[in-house]
Length: 339
Length: 143
Image (tube, rainbow over all chains, first blue to last red; front, side):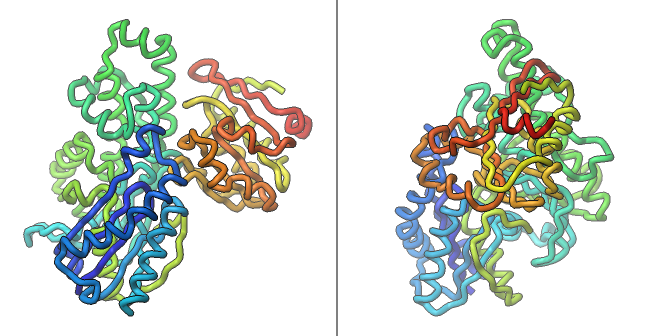
C-alpha cells in the first residue's frame, strides 16, 4: 500500500510517500526556519502563508522522488493537530482535495502519534523490532510527555509537562542568553565543551510525589536568576563563569529529569523498551544518557534516525498506514489535540 | 495595588484570589519578563477560576482554551513580535466570547487591547520575591 502523507502542523511543510508503513520512498521537507529565525520563533501568520505557497510543489516533489503517479497512491494521510490552526488548515485542505480527486481514503493523524510512529519507519534488524508495550518519551519544542504504547492505536499518556515543554525551555534560555534560535542544537553544541557539574541546577519535579510529570518553567527561571544574581551575562562571563558550563549545567538538569522519569515509567509499567520521539531526540546528551542508563538496566532504547525525529511527513504516512489497516478514519483540525 | 509575594506558593495563592473574581468578557493583560513568575501566577488564576487541568505554556500554539466556571482563553504572544501578525491572528476576536482572556506578553498588542482591560504586572525582585501590581478594577474586587 502506498500512502501519501502531508504534515504542516508547525513550521515545516512536508510530504512523503511510504510503502506499507515502513519503506520510505520519499520524505520532502521545506523548512521555514530561515524565515522565522529573525523573529526568534514561529510567526503563525507567516507560517500559514508559507505553507500555502509551498504545499503543492512539496507534494509534487514527494511523488516525483518516489517515482509514483498520484493515481498509484492508495491513501492520503494528514496531520490534524496539535499545532497552529492556520498551518494545520493548509495541510488538511490539500489532503482533502487530493483524496477527493483520486477517490482514495483520507486518514487523519495526530501529530504526536506520528512522532511515535517514526520508530516503526526504521528498517530495523529483526532482533530490534519494537514489541508492545513500550514507553515513548515524546519531547519537542511544543510537547513533553511519556506515553505508554500498548499496541497500534492504543496509547495512554502517563506523564506530561505541567508548564513548558523541554524544547521550549531550550529556546527561551537560548534567547535569554542571546545565543540564537533554535535553542536546542545551539545549547547542545556549546554544552559539549562545558562541565555539566559546574552549576547545580535543581532537577525539577524529580521527587517521587510528582510521579511521571515534568516541569521546565522553573528551570528556565533558575537560569535567569543565576545570571541576574551575577549582575547579567557580561558580568557573569567576565567573572569567570563560562557560557559552555552554563549550557552544559542547564542541559544536564533537563536530561537527568527526562531520563530518570523514562526509566521510572518503564519500571512501573513493566516495559523492556523505551522509544524516543520528537525533535529533542536529536539532543546528543539525551541520547547518550538514556542509552547508557537504560541499557544498564537491560532496557532497550529505540531512537529513530534524526530525519524522522524532527517534524516530517514519513512518520505521518506510517501512522496513517496502521490506522488504515485498522479502519480508523476521522478528520478535523484540532489545535490542542492530545493522544 | 502592589503586592509582594515571597514564594511560589504565595504567588499561586494570589492567583487563586484573582481567578475567583474574574468576570465574563474580561481581558487581562499580563506583563513581566522571562522568569518573572507569569506561569506560576497563571496556574493559580486558573485554579481560582475553576479550571481542573494543568495550564501548560501556550508559547508554541499561541492560544490554549480551558473550561473553568467560564471559558478561559490563555494567550502567549512571546513569539509574535510583529503587531501585524497579531492582528491577522484575530486575537481580539476572543474578547467578546463570554469568557476571560488572559494575555501573556500583552505589551506586544497594546493598541489592540480594549480600553477597559485589567492589567497585572509582575516584577522579579530577587530569586524568591515578586512584586505584583494589579490594576485598580481588579484590586478593588480583591478587597
